[in-house]
Image (tube, rainbow, N blue to C red):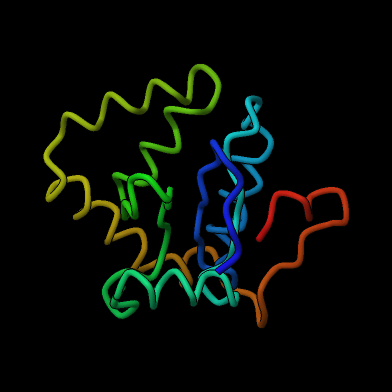
Length: 137
């Protein structure tokens, strides 16, 4: 696996999902402290992390947040922990971490299950522009 630069967090996302790709672009735009790097679940790096952490992609197929120190967080917890590092007012969404994960993840899973139907998907993974490539592994 490619080594993650020190003090970075890696967002793994579904590279063919339009909602996921839009979310990545949103995070890039609002990541003023340059905390995040990105890789598609379908990429070589994504597949290495999935294998290394024994992730069942039939159950977890959307957003993951990886840090070498803390490992992997999934679903709503990942989304809210990403929001913590973004600018105001998005960082206020972290207050939803007080809601039990089984409730948050029920909502998350409902959206994830319908994301292709509602937002569509690409035939292949999105390729970042040359100026954004440095943010991707």
